[in-house]
Image (tube, rainbow, N blue to C red):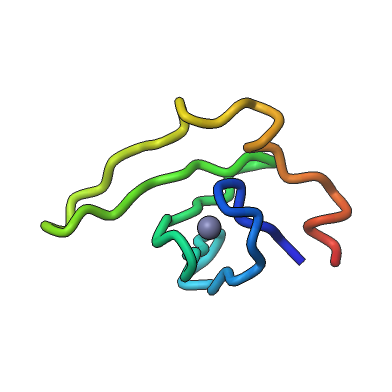
Length: 68
Ligand SMILES: [Zn+2]
């Protein structure tokens, strides 16, 4: 099961192809190759990238996460 890189929770909903949403911290997670791209949805609907707040390691999706 995939984990949210921010809250480490598993409360992720799939909202599109390679697109997940964390219902715990309201972040949008886009899966590209083996990395999460993390966005925050602002109240006005705009999207802010938060990738800089996470390390490469935190953003990497390991194979066992994808397969489980
Ligand atoms: Zn989260």
